[in-house]
Image (tube, rainbow, N blue to C red; front, side, top):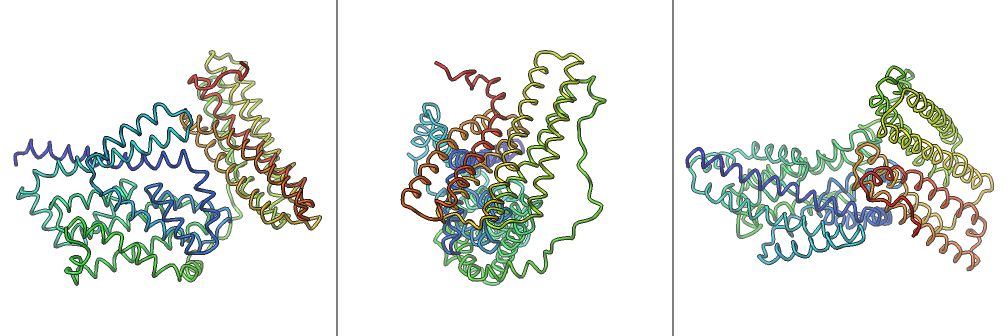
Length: 551
């Protein structure tokens, strides 16, 4: 094989691999944008037993094409106290199985599938009116591109099959399974997708490029790399979340290492998993994750409890650093830099309100005066920040600015007012309602409390999206954020009707807590509306938002 020809083949393989990685992410993005809220609802309501949690985790991973995405979602629930670490680990074990099922489905070769998915997907994406409909089109396009990329890899690697240099390198990997295992782990971590990594390794094995033993070792390494991705992404999460993710990493990585040792000692065991090298490698991936889930599910409680003795919360330092304002008066003569400083301060303000919203929900179940006092103090700090931002932007206006910067300054001032209103709703409405529940010894009906939890989770998800929009100014995410406002309004109306229905039935708990229930829903809708306003200036600029709803 000549050197130019070899470089051309490597470029084709690299391009096909890049398309594979991007297509997997395209499918995941479509599912997250279109169906994140139903999926979070599904996860929350599947925590009743470990088997159901594992099954739900598996289904979520199939939809998201990623066990890592499921790990991040579940981590948010655990960090907010909505799930225990043991139940969270059950979700992750199921998600690992779901990730393996995805690779099985994506290895199916149907010649007519690619053009059908492309034609239907593109038609739906271009012609679809609703946001969710367009996301279905996006998912179908992503699936088609996954199949296209796998065919590209098969075509690009055909000339390498008989090449002596390729054969020598791959034969070495077939003998040195530890090196193959490490390469698999590093590659999966590098592309942030164990699904894409496994599909690539199995395709190379099917082309007789990789010896089956090397492909098996790299697939097992991808399991370690996949567990490490989630560990890195949740590194700054609360300790309970990190324990769950660490337990999954230890189980997945340790199990992969033990399986590698077994294959090294008994290489013939792979022949029991299929008739072809590709089938043996991909079946190993599924069998490993299923076996791991079966063995570990009964032990999730003991595993997370054991980690609690190793991963201990560090005592808070008395010398904690105070939050410093980034509103630098020295930059008032440089309007663009000053505007950026105000935007940074607003982002910090939004993050504080997000933490307040997370902290206030548990008070509806058990009042905690210390937590309530912290929320009140945070509200005072936010009000001071709001005043500081207004005065800073007013002083900036005195220096004179062009039209674009002046408009941006007004937008930031408006966002600051909306965020202050959200903080008010948490402190002056929700905190007061939670205290009334405790003072009057009242409890919601089980259905009523469940509705508030689900609605709270939906609003928290939108708050998180709003903070992302503040950071990246992405028009697509801004559109998603504003569209979510209408969904929240409709859900709030539906929940109000459901509550009225329980009142008609004469449920004592519903009657006693009626005002608290309805005012909580209205406060949450108000908070959601305040954060959704973050997207309006972006959509006005892009022409995606009408200036008035009047006909």
